[in-house]
Length: 404
Image 1 (cartoon, rainbow, N blue to C red):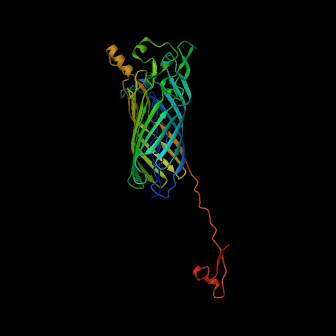
Image 2 (cartoon, rainbow, N blue to C red):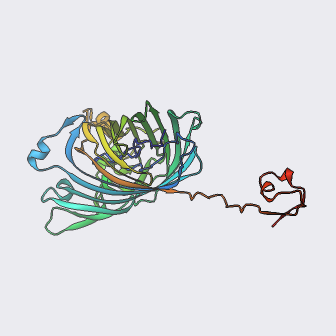
Image 3 (spheres, rainbow, N blue to C red):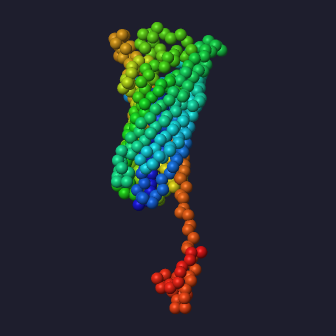
């Protein structure tokens, strides 16, 4: 059986990535291209894989809970986030079982709104730079030599706070020409300011050369509760936001789950279809959950197409959202209790996300065995020996054999 790759995710496999879909800041979880164990003893495995994934979306549809606030579009008061990320990823295969991955996201975001600029005219804020770098180690839990049709892969890593989590830009105050400098909205900050623990669980099962199934689970634990960055857009925080605990930005956990099938056709094309959920919980597993966050989730259908060769793969994945839900945060609950009136904030979501990427496999050079020169003998023989017999059968040589 020929070798083929586990296309799942983070874009096909193939990629394991969670993505932001607007004001719910589900940040990139990377785009690791982790190769499936070879099903052939003769197949050569890559030593390195490098990938680059381009991701873009535009969020503008507001939801409170799972109810779309259509009046925002009708009134022209919607918030519009445009986000572009270039995920650079390197995977080092240590052996058939172990691999390590490093992901570096490069981010460019813009955010257009009315309410952040005095509710007079629409203006934009921007953010650029490197996001939070992720380092992850992966291991197949079952022996790849024995379990060729299916296996489970565990990942454990760390997210470093390399991205700027207090990026500043100018906000208009509503007074003609007057601007203030302050931190941009949480949804377009390149980083979150916390050291996180990455946990992953991925698996596949192949029915034959053409059909296989995959699933991916990822949970990012962020123990830090808040990062101290103001949510007042360069102004003085309101007394109410201080009371509710929404005056500073939270450092939330995030999660992702995927399930689907891969179909290989024409040998080099792989079509993947499945569903995924990306989200931010209202409460973290470790540490406190206070501070401003927009918890919620996005459930999407996820078609993808991959063209692959031995050394290169290109892939296109377009998750299409069919359910979006902005759930109640801890400050929302505090506000509801204090005011005796149920409150839930809103969030803007995208309709779809475009992921376009390429991956390159680098193979370790195969060392060819050194050529050995054949040994040539020169016989010394007496009169009873015939020349033609010695090279074929040395026992017939009556004289001595000397190696040249």
